[in-house]
Length: 301
Image 1 (cartoon, rainbow, N blue to C red):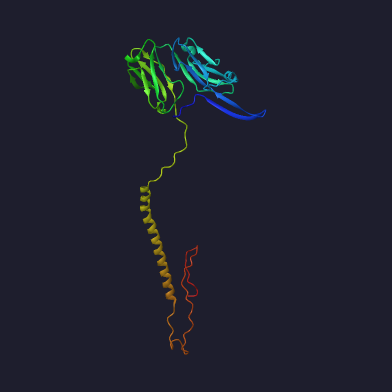
Image 2: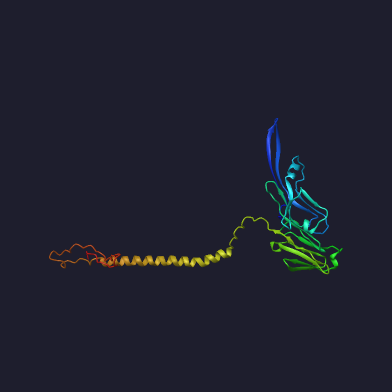
């Protein structure tokens, strides 16, 4: 199942000859992701947590410290003030106004990671939700925690999405099997008799678009139906063409027959008793002109 990568490692392997032996060097560009510990977006006042830029690559390299030094955690507070942190920010005692805000990782050339919105509340209830975006189809569990509640299992807990009630639980948890982009939104929870948590966004990302699926093949029954419907039209068209051709041929033969002279007979054509030479037969034509469409007889008739 596809899942959004928290970091990206791009390596170019270059081989070269040195002192009659082959050497292989790996030039790697490591992109970091933002990590929040503990893994949640909401914290009670005076809680401790850390925000850092981490990488998946486990191998140790000499240039690792230089690469890590190029990344830093940035924070944008509620009053829109942007403050840099070292490579990691550790908060030993969180305060709502000081440590609530948007956090992200940033490097010198301007590359940034996904942002997370951390909320520090002085209220009695918080919602535990995924820090980073989840992939479509994943199983996601939201947990509701009360500051003075050891277990929410005996209390009714309501879960809200975009201000609307979506679930009521007796365990304090809400699990969504196979999330979709329709589940993307702002969530909060409420414990009966204690209060409600702030809102946090659950981000669901669809997998990358693949190639278009091939067109479905037509079934033999569909092809047979098209043939049964189309063949009569084809046959009728051919038959009409043949009928028109035969009629035209019949008219031409009748016209040629009418032009033939009667057979010659002695004593009927003059004193010599010979029939005069047959005159050529000319058919009447209609000469259509563009200016009036009038017809003229052949001057030979």
